Image (spheres, rainbow, N blue to C red):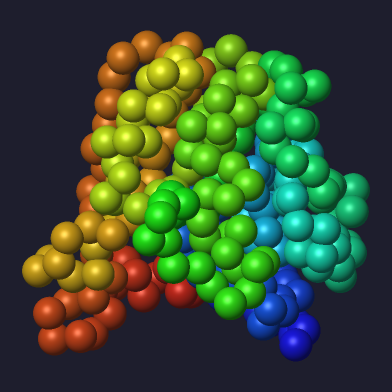
Length: 242
């Protein structure tokens, strides 16, 4: 079932979503606002763009050209519909393609790459969603973490930035893959439900051929122990996350 939704604090933005696919969630909102967009960043690409939530939010942070790449054609069409509804056709392009295929023919073209990737490895005991579309979005069926980091290296210009969100339990693996591809981690932010629980998400910004030097940003904690929303998380629902 297709519906037209608000984009949280961005009251002037609307997004088409379909219950057959994943709806946008906290991780995409965090990623879209965590990425550092420099004045010189003229070309931006969002890998695994899904319904286009990240390009839509980025359009409120920059005037630069934004490309969203999605392997699922029906989902890409949904993203295109949202771009058209918000009259952003001159800034945002959405294409249906395999990121591996696209990256090999678009070397050193982007200043900033973002990605909210499939989080789960495909293993013998993997439990998949009933929907194939949701399975592709959640599991590394079509692309792996290794592939994504390799593709980011290919399409980024020298000193370009790569920003991604991932599960905290794969943090060490993410760091290893980044450095394997000459993507030096520069900023990291952990996300927690509350102070008594381990981090479940991590945001990482890396730079292609960047110098060693890492900033660990203050954590984002969603809820107090009494269940009430923290001020920072509450602001995330109303204003741009900083």
